[in-house]
Amino acid sequence: MTKQAVHTDHAPAAIGPYSQGIIANGFIFTSGQAALIPGTKTLAEGGIQEQTRQTLENIKAILEAAGSSMDRVVKSTVFLKDMNDFSAMNEVYASYFTGTPPARSTVQVARLPMDALVEIEMIALPG
Image (cartoon, rainbow, N blue to C red; front, side, top):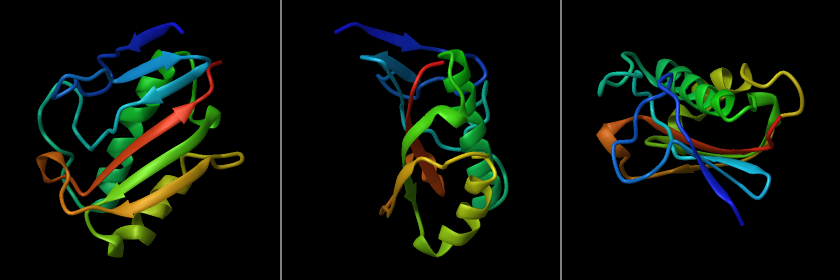
């Protein structure tokens, strides 16, 4: 098995000992992304929709750096601080998938890094 790190300045730098993404065995795995604005350590201002949008833009940048796209995502996991935000998050999330959406799990968690409202990770196919 070969493993290659993915890095882009168009997504936030890792805030711990992990890669933004990894390409391995024909898949692209993104690390969990929050609504950090690239080049800063600041969360996007606003509520769940603004944070979901920034989170997905960060993931989109990582996938593009790996030679993929949102249309190639096969699985995602969404971590919400509050499940009451599910519908508002879903509204933004749906706008990022024009074709068949990926399989997805969504869970509520007690707390996210930097007190973000949402964190999302994805698995995609290259190309």
